[in-house]
Image (cartoon, rainbow, N blue to C red; front, side):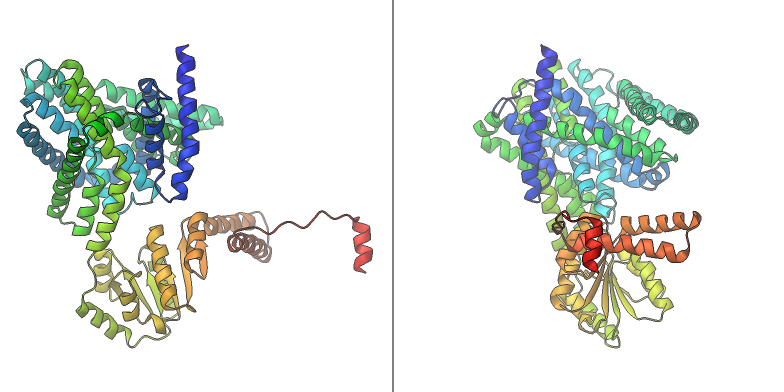
Length: 585
């Protein structure tokens, strides 16, 4: 009976997601918010369709495990070493200073020292699952604010170990506290070292043996075994399963099987993450929030403001601009999923009173539900705080552009933008490039390149660059929304100008065309055609045959883009081929 009830609950949750999430996608809102709202509606505090939240949560927590695993796959141990200063420096200070601030606040509100310590530690943690999912959705994980947010979240996951160790010690009176924390930390470090060393030695050979069997089912099973085994070992050491899964991802990222593994794990991650976000929505106690609305809202505001200010100031202290600091601060302003574990354990052993614990669980859950709005506010604030070109710089830009006519405007000077610039240089064609990465601009200027710091979506920058005299514009920006804004701005100023844009995928391609781009080149399609052409040449086809085939495919793909609503197919012929031939004569 219990198994049937659990299955029924899972089916209800999936049905709610199918109904609610498309509405939020149509509103161009994050699916995460849709999952949270759906969970609140069907949970105990809503329509109470699902009452056994704990049973579903056990399954849903694996969504966070697989999310961290895929993040690990996209990194590597070498890349992780490159951000160690931000992980241990910025992340460590963020946890310590935020916890100290909340400890003082809890003591001021009359909480005992033990309860204040647990509250401070739990509230210092942010939501790894929600923040990373939104960063991945928006393609922002590789940006500066994305990398910083990830570094801080990674350290927070490590901080869970001493915090969970602290709870029973405080319940017992806090004796031998330093020794117990030291032993727990050494045990955790030992397990991490063993996993990394042993994993590097045996993982690649083991995966090669499995791959040689040529059984997709076996390969997927071994992948799941690796993820869950490493997660189980880290959990035994007092760490989270999610951190173990992240380590497993890092180790597999160093092998040649990373892309196959990522494809195998993707369906599990998506479904289980949806379950996780919905169970978070189910924990939101609407009755408590409504009954103590002023107190709950005040505590949520204090939580978000306190964390945003501390995190933002630390980012500034580490040399990052105001725009990035504000974006990271607001992105990490919510409470996290590990606070549920910590506060529940503290209530069980008597460190937190049930009334205080339930109140803080409601505060954390509500702050997590606000995460999509906080991150959207962070983007807006970052845009407002982004350094704008001052009049003197505009005059210099206008002066440099005065001699330019028939030039090309390049928006974005990353890998693709630099390649285009080299092509133009080789043909002795003039160009002016813009980028918002100060170090990239400084390096280009030092090499004598015509690159300027500026936002290509701002009319004053485009006018100063002589957009009205330009022959064409190329938009190569990494972030889809930034690329669309740049295309729209250029099209408003120059309705007849040729605008060439780079798209990440088909959906981005459609949006760029709708924004006004003349030609859009999708990276994935062109790469596929190039690879297919090389394959056909190796199979003996002539250059002319290959060029003809590729052009046919290219025309067909771009026709699909132009005709967003495909034309109706011709009605089935009612005459025979012989009759049609006679008619043609």
